[in-house]
Image (cartoon, rainbow, N blue to C red):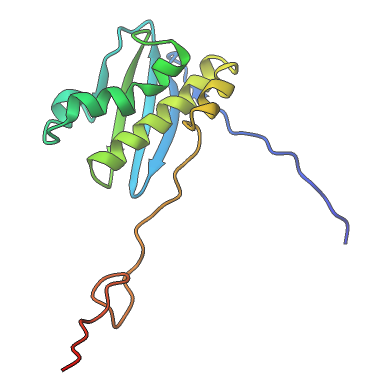
Length: 151
């Protein structure tokens, strides 16, 4: 059998007809469809609400927004140049924020291919493969067994 090697071709984000850039980010059970709009002023809208309002249940939201969602813009030095519109489904706040982060990083590749090395060096283009481990029979949780009593 012949050894056929196919070259890896990365899937680039889509540039829509209205100029928006569309990319998808995933983390745990969360899926984020991210639209990047050029000539913006740095607004982040998640499911129709500003990100500060949508993630308001998290008490550390200001720090988390800066650390997670806006990090690709800091790395590529494009802060406040793009508006972000994200539609999130599934998971919790942390998973959704990290999914948005991956979507933004992927969308920035359509702006300039030079950003790939910067984003890759920071680990922003790698999808986090960790998922919740399934519950096994005979156990209370995935690994928590029954309590042992010696007497």
